[in-house]
Length: 534
Image 1 (cartoon, rainbow, N blue to C red):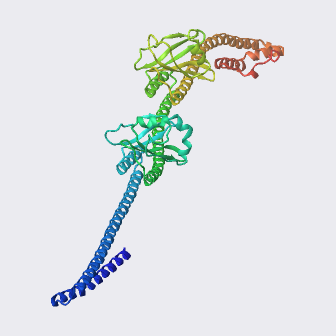
Image 2 (cartoon, rainbow, N blue to C red):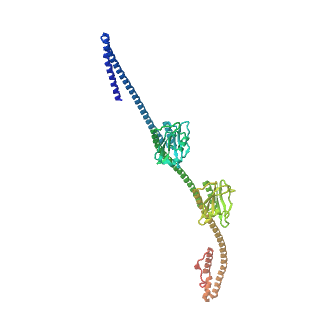
Image 3 (tube, one colour):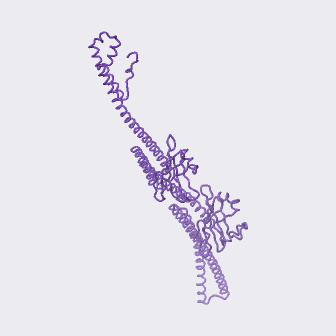
């Protein structure tokens, strides 16, 4: 700007000099006219000289006017260039502001839908286009329009799906490498007929496509479309979309990580809740098992223990019915002796033939715990789910436990384990009860034998004591008479020995001892003597 200003000042000074040089001619002409001393020739010469000066001045004025016009045009061009520069600067500032704003909104968003909707709305407002789309690929390279910003009057394609067979074959890898498609005029561009038909179906006149690559995977496409007329896309527009696509890549990755973290936290929370509930149920089951075990230890009453067991199982697990059957292997029957039901009709004292239900009772006899349901509803119970477990110990199967619940119900592992443990405790209780009953029966039999023995010994003692007293008296009298006759002094030694056995000092004590030993039910073996000793 400074050199042009200097040239203009020089031209103005030159013009002033020309005007100053014309003033002496004006004074001279006035002086000659006033004095009438100039001739016509001189006047003609002066007129020519004046005309020449005027022409020079006119020429200079025209030159100056032309230069001024050029300067004006230069100023206008400078102002236009400055205005364009200002507009470009404003656009750059606006683009930078929009980039920062979208980036900030993206960073503040943690859901993919919110991020994509924010991006398409901001781009549509800034570029003043008819439609902005984000297209997300499926694993088979079909896809869905997951975000859209469209002006009124144009068809919305949000949520619609699209599959382009040509795309998966030709364009996946180029777009993954960063390919950008710029189409100023769909009809004039050298596009495949199927592609032109597809774009025309969506009223597209101009199309700009930028890939969205996330973790080296082609996630989708960022599409900007002009529908009312073709449009010549600017370089900065494609650059701007590429920059936003990069931001969206980061945001999508961030949102996916956030979703994974949220899903992981939710899963952990569910696991904690499930684990807590599992522990609570396990605690309740352990408490139930402990109560049943305590009753088994504290009582030998079979009826009391089994009835308490079926009631505890029904209440704890929440089934509709629980019953306990006892097996008779000789009769090959199973009879329901104990039952607790809340919703089903009672079945107590029902007898089942093991041969008619061989599929079930064979498994129970083998010690298997299983659950099943009937193909056809039972006349008494309808459609139900059943868990069966044997009452089994190391000596065999004594009976079974059946838990009956709603149709379609599946007993969990924890419930099955509780039922098996309760069945084991019930088997122990049955075995203890039966052993106790056997012992009680033996005791009663022994008491009866003892009573019979007492009666027998009492009779034997009486029968033995009465004749022995007579024998004892007779022996004493015989000894007295023989002594008076003097026979004992001359009698053989054998006769004296026989009399010595029968005398009260020896024979009475021996007989009393024998009766006492018989009464007590035992006699020392060293008491018996051989006949020779006698």
